[in-house]
Every structure is written in structure tokens, then in C-alpha cells.
Amino acid sequence: MGGTVTIATLLFLPPRMGEPWRWLRIEGDVVAERGTGVPVADGAPIVAVAPADAVTLHWASLPDRSLAQAAAAARIVVSEASATPQEGLHVAVGVPDGGDRPIGVVAIERMREWLDSLRAIGMDPAVLLPAPLLLPPVEQGFVRADLGGQGVVRGQAAGFADEAGLTEWVTGGIAPMLIAGETLEHALAHAAANPSLNLRQGAFARRRRHAIDWAMVRRAALLLALLLLSTLAIDLVTIARYSLAASRVEAQADAIARQALPRGAAERTDPAQALDERLSRLRGPGQGFTRTTAAVVSAVRATQGVEIAALDFQPNGDLLVTVTADGDAQTSALQARLREAGFGVSGGTFEAAGGRLKGQITVTSR
Image (cartoon, rainbow, N blue to C red; front, side, top):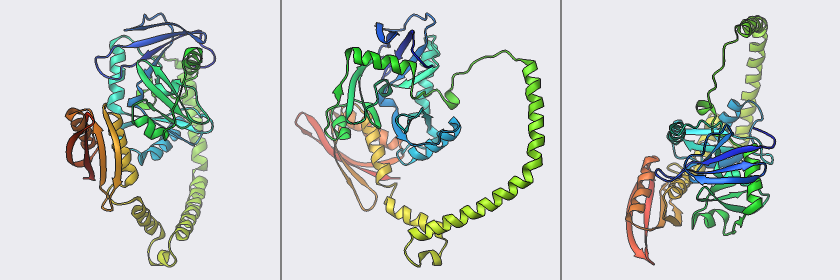
């Protein structure tokens, strides 16, 4: 999709099962119609919108090459920020946004549920866009809007669901500027016409049926044969060049590792191994402060009615988390999510304070 849309429909996926579908119909750069339930399929492009609390967004400078290469680089970028095993996550990469490219991370099972629910109502949208990316990018501060029954916040390199307590913690106390009316409608029209990130990539890309053009197949086979012959002729030269290049890279890596190590450490052992051991010590015991804290914040974000009051990372790798919650059901749900993320949880004794429950839990590496 690109340029200006004449007609498009934004179909908001319900944040939770059993909640109603909501939709907006865009004509030109204004909202011409809105409603709940399933919109009438009139041939207009459908842009499905994923709930903000179900997609984790990152921004990073990635290689502007093939989508597969960019996605592989994105997995490395987000690996330290997620406690969920990589095989359980779907990572999608968007187009450059002010230099950096947006990265969307969502559970594979959640993607399957969304696509199954869309097929159940007869929809197969080509675009699945995270809700925060409907808002315009900002150079500083944050903007907020109500989209599909959910408050959404976007910053220069952040996008998340608006939740009391969590939003102030993420924004550092900066109040997001509310956008509505024509400004919001123009932003929605632009995002529908030029989506900066489509979650339908890789295994979840939209499948299209095409008739087989046998003449094209024969031409492709001939070109493939010529390509193989050309490749065979230069294989020996390429292998030799790669071998020399690999030796140079290995020597450079050892030299860089020696510079990062204390004097004399590189002579006693392999420089790369010594550097890995030093980095492991710097990250901290257990799964490290960054990974453990990211898992806690993700679990709190996914548990309605729970807020973080304090964090204390211990020398043994444990993370003491003080939280407030609406009730016992919320505290139990939070601890269950942390266990599902691969962490141990102990403590959990809560007392009533100001109409809410407050207590401390200990998150440990299993």
C-alpha cells in the first residue's frame, strides 16, 4: 500500500476475548464511518490493528537489505530484552522511521489466534499493524490517543498501551499530548496508506494464489542453469577469497578482544573466550538485570490492575519487586506469567494499603 487511500477500513482486534470488534472507514484523509462488529466487505483494503498491549515495539538501525537479513538482525537486537524463548516469538521489521527501523515482537501463538479469528469473520487483511504506529512519529515527548477502545501512547522510539502507573514510569513523568479530531484522522489515513510495520511477515505473510505460467517457468529454468554454470566457474576463487578474509577477520577479532581485556589476560587464554567471560560477569548473575527486569515489566504490562512500586536487583541475581494490585487474582496472574516466562517466583505476601494490595515478590532464575 502506498500513496493516498481513497477508501480503507481499520479493523481493531479486540484486546481480550469476548470484547467487540471496532472499525473505522477512512475516505481520503478523514474518518467517514465508524462502528462495532464486523464491517461490510465492500472490496476496500482492510488494515487489521493489533492491540498495543500485545506487541512489544523496539527501534534500531538495521541493514537496509533483504527482509530476511533485517529480521535476523532484529532477533539479535531484541534477544536481550525478552525472557521468552526465541522460538516462541514472531519478530517483524518495518521501514526506516527517522533513521531507525521499527521492530515488532509478538508471541507466535497470539499471531495464530488473531489470524484464525480474522478468518472466522471472513477477513484476510494484507496488513496487520500495531496500534501505536497509527499515531504520528514525534521528535520529542509523547503523544496519546484513544484507538479501538484502548488508550495508546507513542514516543520517538516507544509505543505502548496507556496504563495508569506504567505510562508515567515509562515516560519519566512526562504527560503525553492528546491528539484527536482532524489531526488524529489525518494520522490514521496516513498510517493506513503507508504502514511503517506489517506483522504479516515470514510464516505469517499473506498467501496469494497465482496461475502457473509455464513459459515463465521454462525461462526461469534456463536462467537458473546459466547461473549455476557461472557460479561453478568462480567457486574456487570465491572459496579462496573467503578463506583469506576469514583469517583476517579472526585476527582482527583477537586484536579487538585483547584491547578490551586487562593487560596480560589475553596472553594466558583465548582472547575471545576471556572477553565472553568478562561480558558475562558484567551482565550480572542469574539471567542479568536487563533480561529479568524486562520480563517483569512485560508481565506487569500484560496484567491489568498491577503496578510496579520498586525494583531491587540483588548480588545473587534475584530481583525484588514491590507491586500494588487491585486484588488477589491480579497478583496470582502476575506470578503465573513470570513462571511461564521461565522464572522462579517466591514470596508474594500482600497486605491491604489504601484500598489496594501491596507486597513484594522475589523473581529468580530457574
